Image 1 (cartoon, rainbow, N blue to C red):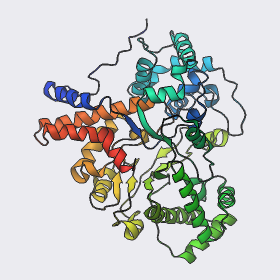
Image 2 (image 1 turned 90 degrees about the horizontal axis):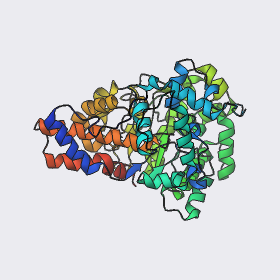
Image 3 (image 1 turned 180 degrees about the horizontal axis):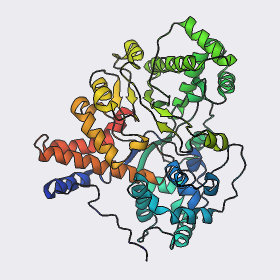
Image 4 (image 1 turned 30 degrees about the vertical axis):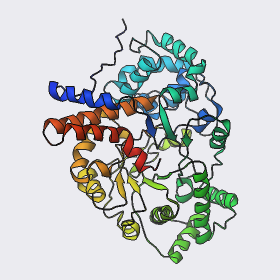
Length: 471
C-alpha cells in the first residue's frame, strides 16, 4: 500500500513552539516572492523552442546528476538510465523502464535534498498524493508524461507558473547564443539571460582547449596566439554576452589560486598551452592568471565575477571516458582561499567597482577563511551553499559559520545552480524556510528585532540576489 505524500506546512521549521510560530510569520512574507535564479545550468533551448519534454524520465532523471549519481552508486549503470554516451551513440533505454527502475529504488533518496525537491515537484506540479514506489510507478509515469503534452506544462508556461522573474543560463565563449536570440525575438516576456563561462578557453587541461581557443579567434578576428589578442578576444565575447543580458561570469576552476604575472610570462604560458607542452603546474598558473585577468576585465565591463573552485572533476575515469563531463563524478576537495586569492586581491581587492562572489565545497573554510575575507575586502561577497551542500544541513552550517563574521550583507542570497528545472521552486522554498528558521532563532535569542528579521527574510529570499547580480 502506497504511503501518503504530504508536504507538511511546518516542514524544516524548528520544534519549539515560539520559534516555529515566528518562523511561520517570516515565511508567510516571503513564500510567494518572485524567484531570482541568477546562476544555473538549465538549457536555454527549452525556453527558445518551448517544445514539450518527451516523458517523465527525460524531464526528471536524465538531466539530473543528483538523481542518477545516487542510482549509479548502488550499481545501476548509466546506460540503463538513458544517459547519452560521449561518442554520440543514442540511448536505447526505454523511458518507462528507466522510470520503473528509478521508482523501485526511490527509498535510496530518503533524507537527501533530492527527496525534498522531487516530492515538492510531484505534489505541487503534478498533484500526487501518494509517495512514489514500484507499485505506482506506471501511474506516476503516465500522469507526468500525459501532463507534459499539455500547453500548461511546456517550459515557458512552467517558468511563469513558478513565478520566475529572471533565470541565468551558462554558456562557453564560443557559444553563438542562438537560443537566447530566439527567445528575445519571440516576443515572450520571460527573462532568460546568459552568463559567461570561459573555462573551455582558459583551462589548458579542458578537452579541446586548443581548438576552443582557435574558434574564439575565428569568432572575434583576433590573433589568439598572442597574449594581447587572446585577451581582446575574451573582451569581445564578454561584450557580446552582455548584449544577450549577461550580468555575470562564472569560473569553475580546480582551485582558487590566482597569479599576477607580467606579459612576457603570460605569453610563455600561452605558447605552451597552445603547443601542448604545458605542464600541470603551468596549467594551474595559466588558469590562475586568467582569474586575475577576468577580474580586471570586470572592472571595465561591470560583469559580476563568480568563482566556483574546489571540485575534482571527472574523478571516475571510466565514466568520463564513456559518458563525458558532468556525470555525477565530481568530488569536493580541500581548498585554500587566503593565500590563493592574495595575488588577485592585491591587484583589485580594494576597488569598489568590482564584485566577486566566492563559493566553496570545503565547508571548513567558512569561518576560518571566507567569512573573514568577505568581511574585509570590498570586492568580495559569499555565495550560498553550493552543490553537495545545497541542503537543509548545509544551509544551517552556512548561516552558523558565516554571518557572525561577514554579516548578512556580504552574502548574496540564494541561487539554485541546477540543470533540473522542476527543482528550482523546491530549492528556493528550502532556502526561504531555513533562512526564516535562522532569523527566528536570532529574534528569540534577543539578538535581532522581529522587524529586522522581516526585512532580512525578504533580502535573503529576493533582494540580495538582485543586488549582487546587478539584476
